[in-house]
Amino acid sequence: MEATVENEQNSQQSIILPMVLAGSMFFILGCITWLNGAITPFLQQMLELSPLQASFIISSFYIAVTIAGIPSAMLIKKVGYKNGMAIGCAIMASSALLYIPAAKLQMIEIFLFAQLLIGVGQTVLQTAVNPYVVKMGSEKSAAVRVCIMGLLNKFAGVVVPIVFAMVTVAAVAGEGEVLSQTQKDVMANSLVAPYIAIAGLIFAFAAFAKFSSLPDLVFEDENPNAKGEVREALSHPHLVLGVIGIALYVAVEVIAADTIGSYALAIGVADYSMMTSYTMACMLVGYAIGIALIPKYMSQQNALVMSGIAGLITVAAVVFGSNESTTISNILLVPFGGPELPDPLVCIALLGFANAMVWPAIWPLALSGLGRLTGTASGLLIMGIAGGALGPLLIGLGNVAGLGAQGAYALMVPSYLFIIFYAVKGHKMRSWK
Image 1 (cartoon, rainbow, N blue to C red):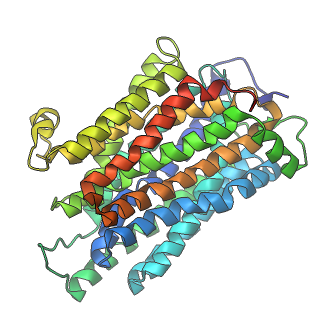
Image 2: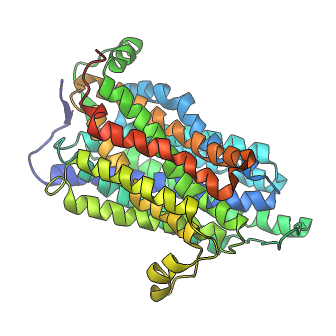
Image 3: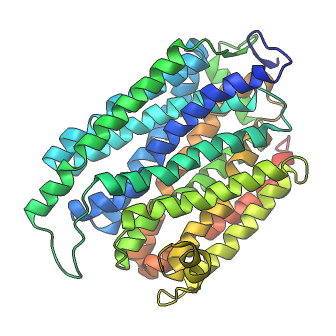
């Protein structure tokens, strides 16, 4: 069975039009996903949360994938990929409105519930849009198409934290100081208008996905036995290892993007809500290089190996760097009008560059040769996003266990080692024997 686009033509336009639809969905995913890096330290300060408690804000978003992964794949099979995108957007938009009573009541429980529901929506959307991108053209160039989608996703990640910092009110307290209730109320009220705007934007994208005339992705001869398909899909080692690889990758990606603000808050950097933008900017550079080099000058496998090695080197720089030194920012940021930041903080952002090519390389390698199992396999890969729930918790637990806010980043090392293994051997395995 081969995945095809309805009324597919062998013209460039037959790929460009679906790319427009997919690109808009990846932009929305970026807006919601990378807002976590800005909202987490904001809520940590407003609600006076410990670093471990703050990690639950991110984890609740990603743990939704475990709940919704396989049901999302079954839903997409029934309603189609375009309708799946529309449903995912509608769930996300509705969930965004829950942040308003959460802010008014200043209750972490409502924030966590809203995070969980919005995570369910992004899982449905991810399950629909990723295979749509992978299968709309040649498998060899799939990583490039995913890179293009990643550029839009990460561009949203650059813009959203900056906009969030501009439209919300952060009340930074000095060492040992506690915010007054008035300061907390001002912070909470500043969340209302942004989340109304977010909900309206996503509802508009849901309508675009539902009513546009762009082609849908269909699979012929679908197997109605979903449980049987899951068992069959799990018999392919390169897919199972790919799911593990996605889980570990998302864990380190979320650590780099969503804990950098909390680390900045811990070391007294005032503009903590904007720090995720630096990580996303580094990822944008990585994606741009990937588009230029793959597959003409570099294979997807080699890109994955280099990403793992770059990750190990950068983690070492984070853990052993000095917060008193600003050498790296003086080279990379200050000459261009950027701020002077501690070296470990800049290195956390540079992890975005190391991580950039992992997702677009693993997806086509894990789906290679699966044919009619592609839809179910995509649902399993999406479940790997639950690894994002593990990353912040590891950093929080490492901090509590005595490694400290800086030393806890050493817990990222096993993830990068597995990514290298998958690139060298794991993706080639077609049998467990």
